[in-house]
Figure 1 (cartoon, helix red, strand yellow):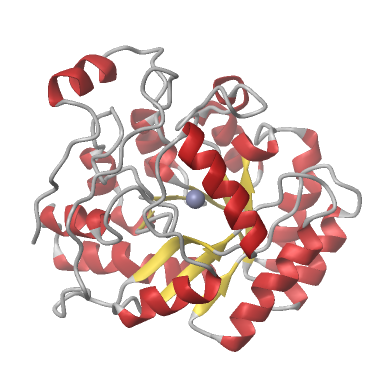
Figure 2 (spheres, protein in one colour):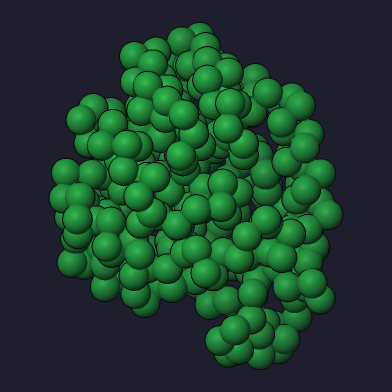
Length: 318
Ligand SMILES: [Zn+2]
C-alpha cells in the first residue's frame, strides 16, 4: 500500500468545485491538472482474482505522440510514455492477465490502418482483446467494421468528444447494427466529462445520460459500455444500469480520486456485475495501479470484486 504524495487540487477547493453544477473538470483555470507522482507497485497483489484491464490504449507512435501533446497541454501530464509493445510488456509483467485495447480515429479515412495495426498486435499476443475504430458517418463505416471483426477485433470503441457526435444520431445506426449483428460490444465515451474547451465540440451539448438511455432502449440487442462510470452524471447512470440489461460501465479514472468531483461509490455497489475495471493506461498522470488500490480498498464482497476486476470484461468481450 502506498499513500499519494500530492493531491491534484487542495481538498477544500475540490469540494467547492464539485458543488458547482456547471464546473467542467478541465476548465482553463484548472487544466492541465498536476501529476500525482504517487508510489507504484511492482506487481499486482498476489491474492487478487484475475485482473483484466478493460480500458488500455494502443496507438502507432505518431498518433501516441499527438495524443500525449494534446493531453499535456490541455488535460494532464502523461506518466507512462510507452509505445504499444512496451505497454503490453509493462502490464503483463506486473500480473495483469488480459487487457482490452482501445484506439480511435479522429478523422475519416484513418480507421482501416489503425484497425490493422491493433489486429496485428492481437494476433501476436492473444491475451489482448482488441477493439476496432470507425468514424461515425464516414463512407463504408459498416464495411470497415465487418473487415475489422473478420480480422479478430471484438467490438468497437467510439469517442463522442474526439469524434464530435451524439450517441443517438442517425449516422450511428450502421455502426450499432454491425455490432448487433456480430454480437459484439460498443464502448462509447458518452459521458460529458472530462470536458475541455480544446475539443472541437461542446461535449455537454453532445453527451447526456438521456441520449444513452434512448440508445439502449431502442437497441435492446446492442451491448453498450460507457467508460468513466458515465462521468459526471453518476446518479443518472446508476439508475440506468439498474434498469437496463444491455448497459455496462467501466471505472476508468473515475474512482482514482483525481478529478475535482466525488468518487461514485454507490454506483459501483449498485450493480457490480455491470462494472468493468479499466484504467486508461498508459495515458495516466498517476501510478498505474492507483485505481486498483482504490477499488480493493472498498472491500467489496469477494464475488463482486472478482466480477469487476475481470469476469465482467471477459463475458462482455469474449
Ligand atoms: Zn480512454
